[in-house]
Picture 1 (cartoon, helix red, strand yellow):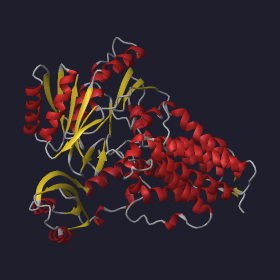
Picture 2 (picture 1 turned 180 degrees about the horizontal axis):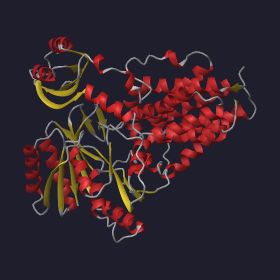
Picture 3 (picture 1 turned 180 degrees about the vertical axis):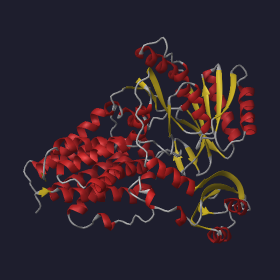
Length: 544
């Protein structure tokens, strides 16, 4: 029987939890029902927990209270996406109860789990059942019940895990979307993975070294200075998608060719498309050979030697802190060179690169706030999965931070256009921005990240997806078909202005054609076409 946990054991429990999340992040990601490419739950939870693991490895705290504080502080700054923020809040409560304690007994641990749940529920404006909140609450309640009479901390954690698993199985019935898809909640699953790993570590069944992390790293901030660019045999990290012209043609010969000109080769395919990741010195040859199998749809090529040099420089740089030179400033989250230029022209002081598939951490946003030379900083997250991470910055800086809860790029553009930082007060600026974003409808054309049966649509991976204000319009092999479906919905809104932002994989000519198609269907709307250069979304369309 074990009645206490010391700092070394608690550290190992948390390191095992981080490693287990990293190993299981893809299965957790695949529980996400909505098929659009996004900052998936497993990835966000893993990166958040990984930030805590990296700090624990670096500091090796000497008491349970210090371990909890070290992890909680790092998770807060490293939190990504809503699931990552909620995870950081659970650990914040843990640290509050364990503060000043050398060791931890069953009663302390149960109290700490429940304090974390309370912190998470208090931070979420509209807590939804059938989520990580439910799983953590039920689990903590079971721990509290055990601690009333029991002192064996291993049995306590076992009871908490059993209840968490039961609660997880019920999430499929608590959320209509999950019920229709027949899956459990991704965040809840992530929490169960954490408890499983902590219990296994407590029992001595696993250690941080037990996990095979050869394909990934827990520490998201590796020591790049210790890595010589001469060790990079193949310089270009090359990723691309090919739409097949013959779905039955095997890729064996292509796989052999790509393997002969590079390394780190991964090819994934569906009936319609295949995606290649390869490190090579001749990316052009890889693309040319691959186009014998179909049409190039998307490509991204990066020089890893240049990336290494930039990372070394960034790792050695101290975060910039700017003293106020003006009353009001702004920080905007967006992706794409065109989008960044647009927001800069609208007056943004700092741009945080991020959005779908790459949710920035709380620390990323905080650093931008600190670097803004203003006493009051307005933050535009431009994504619903980034708002909570931005909100965590408020108590971390001496500057006054105001979050404008924009959920799309077009909302962010309209909100910034409405701001008058020369004549208005802080309250007036915030009110004008919030009112402006309400008048914006956002349409998105992207691609399906996975096969899905969603909201009456049978969707295949790689198909084009159309969305309007977050609701799925359908999927198609043709962007024009989706634009026509979209125009029918937009007619009901009778917009005065339409703005088409086209992405990094769209030509100006194709964007003009889409604009012309929309103009023909909605001739009374004033049309603008802007090169946003955004990833993930072929088109973002603003209707006002």
